[in-house]
Length: 189
Image (cartoon, rainbow, N blue to C red; front, side, top):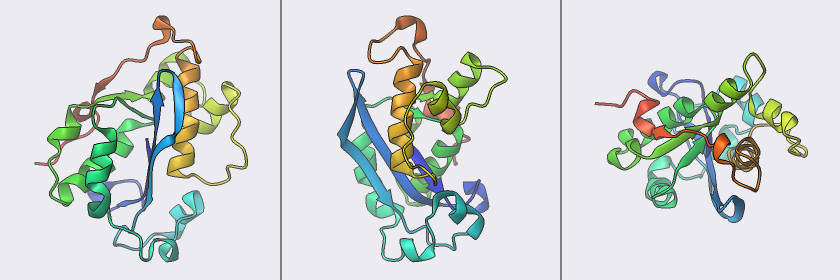
């Protein structure tokens, strides 16, 4: 799962502009089972973040707001273990959006989450562990990726996750620990 946003903190009023997720089942990426939306954040998108993900104010005009797709998102992730690179960032935005739009966050706060960034830092200390560096380290083709994109980054992360945990053959020694989503963020009251 991955998100793109208007900035770095939902506590400062930043919102999601894109959300993407792809299913991994039996150690295989299920490219036909994906969730993806560009979202209208209902606020201005600063140029500094447009340079990162390429989603500007014109691209979100007429797109759904998070409230319109929230239940579909919750249905998509139901029963899953979420694999997120820098989980506190993405979960902070997701839980904030759910809270702002009146959705019950209980359904997500107990979900198991694997933070691939935390795992990569433990496995590869003192090295760059962003998604690009991990793709390079594990020989995962990034294609023509010039900008961040929630769905593309979810697909790349799925491949990184599989590579970090033993490839297509599962290795118990490389299993990543999961934690409840609530352990990554301060939950709204």
